[in-house]
Length: 232
Ligand SMILES: [Zn+2]
Image 1 (cartoon, rainbow, N blue to C red):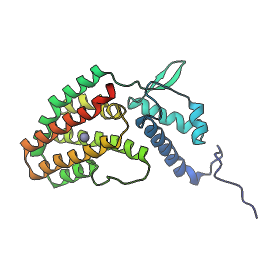
Image 2: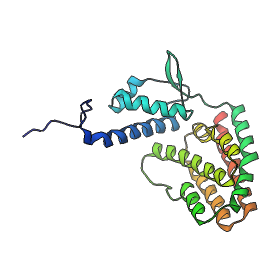
Image 3: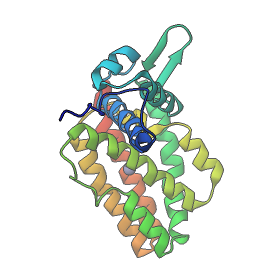
């Protein structure tokens, strides 16, 4: 006996499949995010909803939902009557300004956070540092985009524990990590950053604020130097 194919995308979805619909929206979001981060969707280029509908073989709803979420994260711009496009690459000037800002704020915050760390917070930072998830997963693009997100969380958590919400918000509103990782798509960017995260974690674990400040400064300077060739 032949059963009807329930996997076909249909508006008449049985109630039991709502859960699957939710994870479908999440999967579509992750897939577009990975394409943006790995430059498969080039910065500044147009994003056509119909093309994505065809590529992922889904309805318009999860695509629009994903694009709305990416717009909130500063990765996608929506222009009235024109539609969506990927946010343009940051300029060299903006890049310099971002790193100047980060170097002013983040090493000092790392030192300050050190004093506020207990075992529970250390565990959160260890998890967020992404070191344990290193080399997990075969999809290179997904790994890269996951690292970009993980890096944003790691740095944000340090700001949270440093307990200055104004500084934390200022940095978080820049969506720094999503912009800088789109400058270059290269495994070296993530591998070396993970080593530097380990150095920051070691200083936190030792409860050494000066070492944490220095490790953060080294990480930011190296990160800047790794990405600078993108402007050459
Ligand atoms: Zn980092």
